[in-house]
Image (cartoon, rainbow, N blue to C red):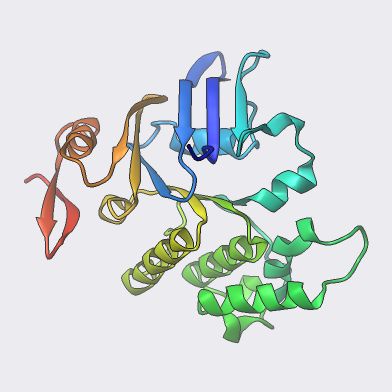
Length: 258
């Protein structure tokens, strides 16, 4: 049986004395794309930060997150950064040019104080071309639109070449054609053996994932195959049945219930 990409147990996050996330047990399969969905305030971003090691799993010593079978807390920051790439919200590197922003993704692979290698430059070039951002490589990030910046940050994530990629609202500011490009890229990554976990508000795009992780009020209410009727039912329920999942042109889409 294949080792899960991520496993978490006894996750319990408090803010101002209030529980905002409580997940007794969770397993994210390797080599698949899992999308985390749910209403605003469901704890999606908080869960992703816990899985990325940005937030502790619990305020005590019981909670644990494992990365490919290894306790994440026991891994060196360098090794963890080589295996897990993170794309969060509102990441700011405005004073850097685009190529330098993407090169930051190669830092976990570089020796201390060493300059970028030929492989580093090749990975950066490939990432920029994959996100259609190559032509802006000499421009400061501050001169780009919101959607263009988002594509550069995605390129930085790709440049890491990690086995596991965590993305929090990666489609923010992207227009529909570039959302479609992102979707194609996710399928290519999974086909290449990568593991993707994304927090998405775009439910119809989330339904293209292999699995959905449905959340509400800081808890995981359902985890299952995105094609299954039980998953669609859980998805509609978490949004108070204000959406419906329909088969349209050979794919599942979520539409508002009027």
